[in-house]
Length: 572
Image (cartoon, rainbow, N blue to C red):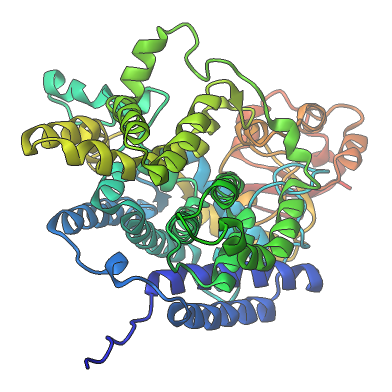
């Protein structure tokens, strides 16, 4: 008789459970306390560590899921690590007194996340009002920014923490992708693309050619800049992996409380991912189940019991009582416009769609139930997203198309690539991944414009002067994406119009009033009251945007503070 091997802690499950628990506890305690406070941050982080430690040892996991790493797995993970070190290691770096970012996709998104983190860490009322638009409650899955705010409130430096958490999220995503679909899922996500990158063969210039078409490289365009994916991607993949084992194979997966914890927290982190995972879980619970096994839905009920209350509360908060449903609408053709549809699909998606359709045909012919239950909803949802938009900016459909793509990769590997000879298999993989590989290589050697997130001396001076002002007091500024007032955590009357529009916020009335205030119309004080603006900031950005302003506030009295950065006036 031999002893059974001792189970090892599942570090991937533990880390994702820890992050989920810390986020959920912080949201709940901050709601009770009225704001994020140091004791809330400390308790939330400790609760997360405790939940993660228990989760790491509580779930029986098939050793095959974690062991037997092939050389292909190793190569894919090493490539993922190298690209992640380059992108997140240079997420923020200092040059000539400024903090810069390497990747153009970060240029607009990174300052917004910085604003959210600072606003929360400085003790904004919770659930917060929108810090980039007066009169609006924040309708945004703030989970990752909330999680980041916990150590920031306890003293961690945000410029250091952002890259560190990025690298941690990349590590979790890489191992979760491997667990979901092996080396093909890891490399397929990292090097996603179509045919645009093949231009390198006749131009000789290594660039992110995929950035010029609608279906961009997912790693660069979504995973790095849109920080919700740092937790949403590994969390969603773990849930799908567990659902697949329990509902389609009648095998053990995550413990119900762990599954419920991650599932229930997901709406706080990324609403699109929560919707896709819940759709697949519900479908598999109804029509899944291995032959002669108990009905699949019974296997999901314990997890659902754990997830239902936190998920319902989270969805309600993030959508402000389901108001975001109005953002969904018809958009036939997605971003095809006047382009030839067949050429659009081929240029954007390359070999992915032919391989996915081939996998679907083979799954149907061979009666491969599991693969059909993955491919049919994945490709069905993929098709639906060419008719329906999920946000005002139709490109945001890629946040769901990402999941359709990742879902289809394992069946493509098992049904199509596995049938090909070695030569044809290599050719198919190269055809699938070449364009994306050119993109990540081009992004690594980027020699584009100087992408300044903030000027350090200006930022520190503005934050110092704003330190005595209440964190809820709004400031009228020029609506730019990286204004130092916002980066210090203070709410603006109106932020960058592109952010407001893409979040589905109607800012026309506020923007008109802000323009009147900063131009110095005769009723400028009344405009300030109507906008709930207690302060007005006048600096280089305002001077450039409102050069014709009468600046009547200057005659009303001296500024509260001034310096090379500009001046701050009280206008209420």
